[in-house]
Image 1 (cartoon, rainbow, N blue to C red):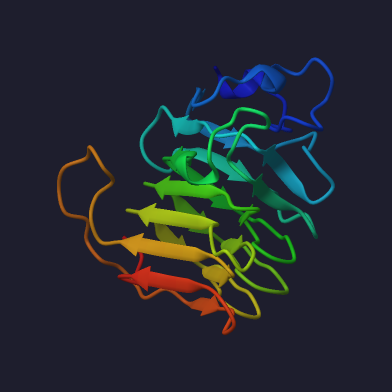
Image 2: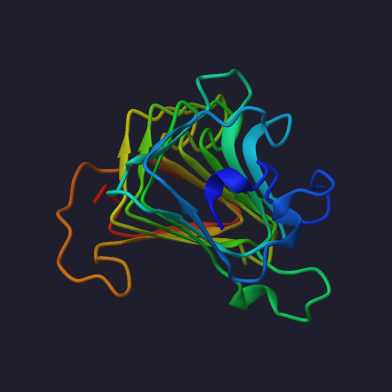
Length: 219
């Protein structure tokens, strides 16, 4: 499926009637050409794009970072909200469904929590070969906010991803609230080589629940 053929609301239950995204199959790939996507019209009042109980692969066809999702610095507007990654009524367990994002730049997000990407409601996400730049929030997680409940099932694995110039009250780059984030010092699965470690990340964790582990650096 081409990225420009789906609606910004990538979800199931509350999509615009007749939008292509209502018919995304489990595990389908969404392909984007290199370029800048400003995301207008937006998928919700608080994010340019949103996905609800879907799992798929979002893939940039150009060089890493060449597909740019830009919130244009709009106050109160993040870039991507992910609420769960399981299909309603599919009988599939929460833990086996993964939404993956490969090769994208997220810039100028401005949501109150998770300036660029908010992962929520037991979502399982893999982020690889991405770049988070100049995102800001007044609360937690300038680039990524990963949140859940006391089950601590919401989780993100991050590979070969750069964080630069993101700001927040807590966790300029990543904040985990009853959720888990793991930053890997290896290339993504099925990729070869050894990524070079960059600058330290600024992170935050809810002291009552949540973890951020691995090598806490850009790669």
